[in-house]
Length: 199
Image (cartoon, rainbow, N blue to C red; front, top):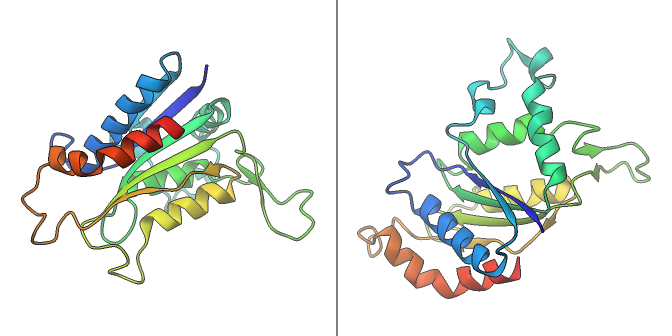
């Protein structure tokens, strides 16, 4: 039996969020093939960890927060991580960035100790990671912005086995703006079902 953590990060109301809906549909498909797995879902908007953000007034204590270890330990105990991530202002949502800030801690999720080339050694090599990314613009429309590549890079940095991301793009262009979240799912159903089966 695998332990699977799911992170929903969209700040958009969950009733209309394309990102949240597609991630939930992915999880539904995953469950069909992995009935005995333990699924732990977190809406990062409601997470206790997201009541505190890094700033100059708390920097010295930020990484000592006992909640950091709670989620780091959950990640270390899990086998798989599923992340729903829309692009918000050309980047990942602040909820997800803050979660990463809380768990990206030297000697807990990565280490330079015993590194022979000076690069980091990731300590979350127990995780397979599947990213489900959405964005309003066409793929690579903004050369300076690639939120899913940042996520892939970060989880690779901490040692995870990052699967090829599912990227649903162009959701806000003229011909797509009136489409429902259900329509986006139907258009990408085959890919989502395949990736859910493979994870």
